Image 1 (tube, rainbow, N blue to C red):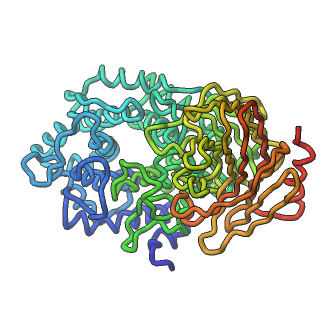
Image 2 (cartoon, rainbow, N blue to C red; image 1 turned 90 degrees about the horizontal axis):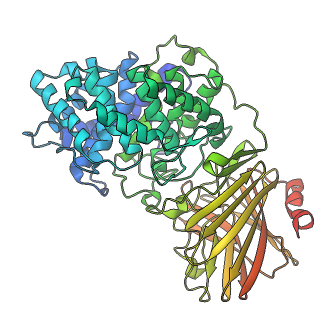
Image 3 (cartoon, one colour; image 1 turned 90 degrees about the vertical axis):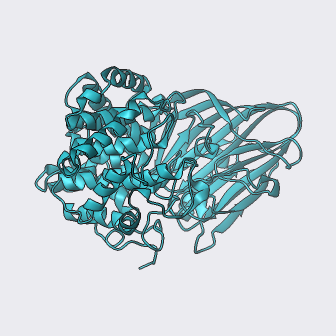
Length: 595
């Protein structure tokens, strides 16, 4: 077994309830020596995040609660649980040298306060009741302090709500600000986009936070707090979300690589586990269980652990370049949210039902509410994307024309553009011969029909109207219309293919409509000229910039255009496997699509 695999997880069949209980324990076990030695001042000495180190320590203690609390609630054992309770004592005691500090405005401590609230609400007997009364008072005071502090105007508004749920559960409702909860819940509900989808906050960002934050916390509150009006609303919206969200998963369990916080890995399965815990049945229970279990199993063979078994920062492999600035060395343990079903008893239908495959899916699924168009090929999903671009993060996580469950995506797509190296799924302009480049920065109006996506976007200096049309299995066309007020070099790229251990192969087709096709370890990616403009073929080697693989290659086409009105059209092919018939269908786009 590879040294970065984790015994008890990587070699675990992950089928039965006991398998998943073992996985939860084994995932936390590498943290135990550090918590035992350092208590609430946990520091792995592997770098930092954009918040202080005491908040980082809190993160490392509290994030395991997302998995350990359900384990304990379901009757599972965790022999080292007392050291986490001791860390909780230390971290909430102002007189202790390991004190985490009071929660402040826009403070990372707020994020972890939600995990502490969840712990108290779900298993008070394994947490609150183990504390002496002075310790309880200090914990309650520390946790209640979140209510007077400013939160980020996004899913963070749930953190005081979950802290309040914990306080109520342990009999400290006297500290709860009910009016704050109502305001927070009303604000959170207002970000609903329709058809089950949420945007995360005022930015309207569409990513996995819709599932592992907005829906997860709302549904969790409904489970913990009973049947008020907002709980009923959360249940209805979660039920509406299930079918469309399933299109973000491949038949083999892979989740769509899109947006920020992919460092949380199998947290992308958390919605499915909680849906079962909540007793909602918008899809057959076997389908829900299959979505949940297959996504977690996807991670067994990926090198996501450090040599000593700690979940690394990165996505498909350790890589700080694809992380956010708020990812500390223990941030990945938000992945433990996947283990909510461990609170269900052995005889619960969830554990007894057989996993079922995904329900039959149409070749194309339009999702106007979140401004995407989904296309299916080889059991995978391609998501053509026109949702708002989250500009305060790496914009590559939101500005690609397409994302998929088959390929990772590149960050820093223009980092080496002056050297002729580009990331995947972009259209880029240079007005100075290739020294400086610009790509999609902001999306304007979008129009989604049953089989087509149109979007008006800008680089900040150059406006473009793009139309995307799926035209076959894994085949689609992008048509871009724009006016240049000066000559420009224009580049467009396709999907990145993996070549970690084996170099990708390349096939070119010449003529007036040239094409380049790359075959990698994971996929076939092609790009084809469809408009008759002269252009050159290229491919780019990308190193440590892709979420899935440290060594990838991207196909592309390059044009030199004069000032004036232009329409450029490219065909694309993405598939898990090649074949002469598939290559012929791709090249045949030159006949069927040129206009």
